[in-house]
Length: 453
Image (cartoon, rainbow, N blue to C red; front, top):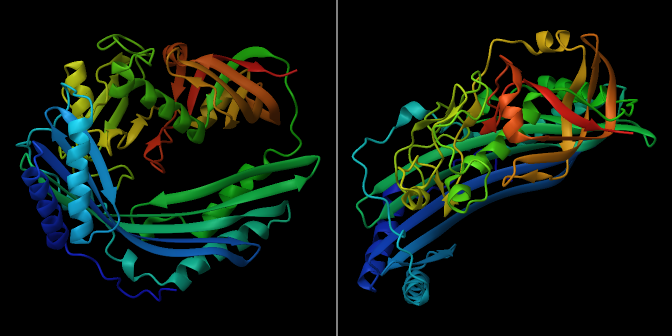
C-alpha cells in the first residue's frame, strides 16, 4: 500500500525518445508512415462495503501502440513490454501484416498542424494527486458510506468507491508531430438500497473531477445518494399513455451519448445513423445547442490534442437547432470530404466534453409547469437504434400531477424517437454540471410514450 510517496515516472523525454525510435525503426523496416503512442499511468482504486475494504488496487502500467501504413495498407500493434528486442519484433510483424492487409485509399496520417497546441491553461493535471496517501483515500470512501448508512431509511450498501488516476501520453508520428501531456482523474461515489424485498429501491451518487480537492465532500455525496434512493420507495405503476417527460441530468447524459453516436463521422460514412446527409438542416428546436469542447478547462474530456495529433478545438455540433458538424477523426473526415474535428480516440472517433448548452429554466419551474407527466430518473436496458433514432428503455421515475411530484413510478417503459424529441424540446434547465464528459442539464420533452399496465 502506498503511503503517499512520489512514484517513479518516466520523463517526457524518455518516452518521446522511445516513440521516436519506434517510428524511425518502422520506416527503416519499409513502412511509408508510422505513428507511436506511449502511455505511462498509475491508478488507485478502493471499494469499501459495510465499513470494510473489499477491494484495493494500486497499479502502474506502460504501454505502446503502433500504427504503420504501407501502400495504403494499415496494421496496428500494441505491447506493454517495452524491451528493445520485443519492440523490434512488434514493428517487423506490423509492417509485414500491413503488406498483407487490404488497401484503403483513405488511410494515412493527419498532416502536421500549424496551430499551436494548448498548454497549462487546460489545467487537467493535479500535481498533488501523486502525493496523496492511500490511507487518506480509503478514509474518504469509508466516511462516504458511513454517512449514508447513518440514515435509518437505508437498509443496505452496495459499497463506496474511490478512484484516482494519473498518467502521461506521448504521440510521435512520421509526419513530424511530437506531443505529450499529463492528466489526472478522481472520483468518489456510493451505491445504496432502501426498503425490503417487496419494496426495495436502489440508487447512487458520485463526484468526478480532474483535481482531487475539487471532489464533493463525503457528506454531500452520501446525502445526495440517500435522497435519490429513498424517493423511489413505494412506487406505483402507470397506465400507458403519451405524456411530457422531464429528463434529469443523469438521463440527459445517456441521451447525449446516443446523440453522439448519431453524429459520429464513423456512423455517417457507414450510413448507420438517421442524421446522415443532414448537415446544414434544422434537426432540433432552435433552443437546442450542442457542443463538443476539447478545450474546456478542467473538463473530464479535455486534452491538448487528439490521437491523430491534431490540436483540440471547440466544435458546435448543433447550433440553434441546426446540424453544423459531424464529429470526425482524420480518417472519417477524409471519407466524408470534411475537415477533422480533432475527435480521434484510439483508432476510432470519441467525444471530448460533449454537452447540451444550458437554458434559462430551473428544474422546479419545469415541474410546476407540468400538469401531468413523468420525471425520468433512471433507465435500464439498451433499446437505442441510431439508424432510425428509435428509443425504448425500461424506466423509473417520479409522477407529476398538478405541478407537484406525487409518487414514484416503476415497471414502465419509455419510448420515442430522437429525431422527434430534438424538435419537441419544451424547456432546457440551467443546472448543467460537468460531472462527466458527456452530459447535459435537465430537459423537458413535449411527449413520449410511457407504457405501463
